[in-house]
Each structure stands twice: as structure tokens, then as C-alpha cells.
Amino acid sequence: MARLGLGDAWRVTFANDMDRTKTAAYAAAFGAAHLHAGDVWDVQAGDLPGRADLAWASFPCQDLSLAGARAGLDAPRSGAFWGFWRLMEGLAQEGRGPRILALENVTGLLTSRDGRDFSALATVLADAGFAFGALQIDAAHFVPQSRPRVFVIAVRGAAPAALRAAGPAAPLHSEGVIAAHARLDARTAAHWVWWRLPAPPRRNTSLADIVEDAPAACWHSADKTARLRAMMSQRQRQKLHDMQAGGVPAVGALFRRVRVEYGAKVQRAEVRFDGVAGCLRTPAGGSSRQTLLFVEGDRVRSRLMTAREGARLMGLPDDYPLPASQTQGLHLVGDGVAAPVVRWLSANLLEPLARTARAPQR
Image (tube, rainbow, N blue to C red; front, side):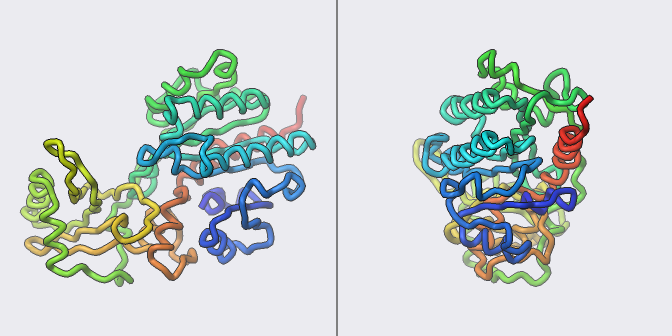
């Protein structure tokens, strides 16, 4: 999805992932000539051709997510970052180090292990001579999905003055980004850049716009929809009642969550009707898949979100190849980066950085 977002301004010369479903989808979309399927720790610097302008890394988030164990960058999965960094160091030793790095992860990266993980990442960037800064971008600016992510953008050497801001600016420099910067030691903080970017655009689509006309998923039975409604809190039931009373057809996104009420854990169904879906997950089964709730006056229907709808929420075109399995398809898109976010970031920061890096020095 990063490849889709970067677009034609970039020529990809190497791609890597160890997930079979992801590599199969990538090969179907772009070919496998430059694709290395396997663990990043098994890749050697000699496997990467030439000197790239940009290296992009979306490393696993399970150990950093607010919903996960948050074991940190030393854990096996998110420890893949160090496999990537080993390659960057190897390329630098050969005089082929990429000029720009883009690192993407969940917002938990900023606070994992009380901020020590982000500080460790920042320190290795500073020690390697990169100027760097973090941005928090919510995909909801571009697609009808709430999906905040952190993007650490680093450039070798000094950052161009035209791309540097005097200080943080909302919404891209969130409170979490500002706090993460404040935790850095003085030597590392000296390499920090408050990147200057325009305000993100206003989204012009809603959840209803991505719904399939003839979905592959089956509608839930009336009894199953009733059970979902019974799992709602009084506040959620009132929200649904208000939508019914409004008389306007609506589509809501529903998640099942465990809440603690009066000291006991209770599973609740929670729905939002603001035209935005909740953040896509990587489901292992139907229980963790997002449900769509269709309201048409007194009639309320429900069904699981399809993989194609999930792909649309990530900004993927309808001809993008997806696995035949709905669960595998949702796992594929739920573990990715929203392509329109990458496109905007590339046009407003990565491409200007690349042009500056390639400009003759005077």
C-alpha cells in the first residue's frame, strides 16, 4: 500500500515482507521481479541494488499498539525494525545509504515503554547523521476510516530550510508527538525537525460511499442483529433510536468491545454514525471483524464488512487483487498503511526532499 501511495514519481527497486498473503498480493499487483519474500533479518545489504533515494519501513506494530502487550522494540515482531536498521547501516558502510527514511507505525510507538522505544529509535537516527521529525496523520482526513498513525521522516544531513517549521503545528504535530520530542536528550533533540506541511485536505467521502452494492458477505439473521442490539448500552441504544427517528437511511460501523461496568467485564456493541469507520484490525476470525449496521426507519440490518470494503477504506482501487478469503483479505488491508496518506505525504514532503537531495551542491 505504501507502493501504491508513492505512485509514479518513484521507481521501486526492492520490496520485502515475510507474510505469504501480502507477498502474493504484491506480486499479483506489481510483479515479483524485485520482491524478496522472507524475514528482513535474512536480507543482506548486497541483496539491495544501487543507492535508493528512499527506504520505507512499516514494521510490525503488535508489540507497540495500545491494544497489545507493548513489549517494545526488543520484542520479536517489532524487533524487525532492527533488522531493517542493520540493512541501512550496511548500505551506509558501502556508501549506498538511502538519503531519506520513512518509518510508519501505530501511535503507541510514541509512548511504548514510557517513551523509551521512540527515544531509542530517535537516537540511532541522530547518531547516523539524520535530521528527523515525527508526524501524526489520521487517515480520516482522506478516507472514511479513523486510523491515526505516526510517520517518522528522516533525511541524511541537514533538512532544507523551506521544509522546516519554527515549531509544532496542529494537527500533524499532536500532543503525543510534542511529548515524545520533549523526552529526547539534548544531543538527539538537536537533530529534530518540525516538518512544515500544508494542512491535510477535507475528506469528501463517507462510510456509505464505500459500501458494496452486492456484497460477498451474507446478511445476519434477524435474531443475530437483535443480539447485537441487546449488547448495546443504554446510550448506544438511544443513539440507534435517534437515527431511526430521523427517517434518513444511515450506515454505521459497529465493534464489539469488552468494557468494565460496576467492576465486571461486559461485552458491548458500540456503533458510530458519523460517516467514519473505526480503525481496521487484522482479524483472526469473525469476532474481531467490523460490523456494518444499516438503518432504514424501523428496519435495522447488519452484516460483516467485506474485504473489498476494507480495501476501499484504505484507499485501494477496486482492481487491486485481494485474497479469495474474506478474513485473509481483511488481514491484508487491516495491517497496511492507507495509500492516500502516503500519496499526500510523498507529494508534500518526500518528493521535495528527494529533489533537494539530488540537487547539485554549490
